[in-house]
Length: 409
Ligand SMILES: [Zn+2]
Image (tube, rainbow, N blue to C red; front, side, top):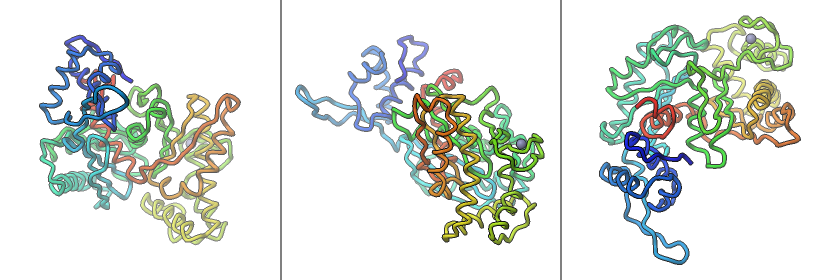
């Protein structure tokens, strides 16, 4: 639990601490309990609660009886008072979600990217989809906290620029933050997909799990998100979590980037997967060395075969994901955490076949296994994890008592 401070100049921070406590209290929380959990004086609690009531963000009209003594009046979140929007740009598809203050999804939509190599068109399509969702929801625009846009890394968050995402042709040095702000006239923050997935999981997890875990994001690319001591680890340029060239320990083929022969990137190159697929008798309609779109549709073909019961396709996918497990195990050694959440658009399709094996590999590689085991589970957020993370990121920036948000004020 975050502790508050009674210094007047940090009033906004206290408001965020108190609001966060009310937001997380599913059954409501009394003023006395708030004072106990935040360490703030009854006077400070009273001032802040008055502001939150005036703004309609909380209500205080329910009493509950628990045990002997007087029934207590509780403060509860007015969950739909404000909303946040998240956009996830993934090769091939844009996902947009609208969340309420409790992080519940009110609306969601997936649209195909119009022409991936023309970023302006895609950015316009993003803004248009956001506008449509807002107007269909009936939520007044003034009740929209903002928009979190989630993109593949690397990115330059200071300039709001996507630097050179390997899987999006034509997106080198593309400015995305400013055009979206201009089109939407809303606050916009930008996050890398792997980091956004961790933010989403942090919002959705329970108290026991929230502070320390690893997210392995498995989408068009693969990356790690790290939550340590309650904070998402971003690195000095918001690009932490690039694990593509970690060694898996299993020889694959020479990597064109790092020149080693056993990195994750080399192990999961589509040309190698396609060769293995053909060796297993799986017929792909795309070339081994195709465009980004052809590679994505090739992976989809393998997933479709697996779904229709082709055991060789399942085996191939399981083998691919085992490499991700090898890298995740090494990260667990580095971080000493007890929970790994497997997430991302591709994992949401294949996780059911791979979870047991990946869990086994991670625990096998974990050096401190005599001290504790590592729980490994699949995200419950499916292909929307990135977009949900974007919406949670704008809520974090506007509402949460995070150190980073405090520095922004
Ligand atoms: Zn490499």
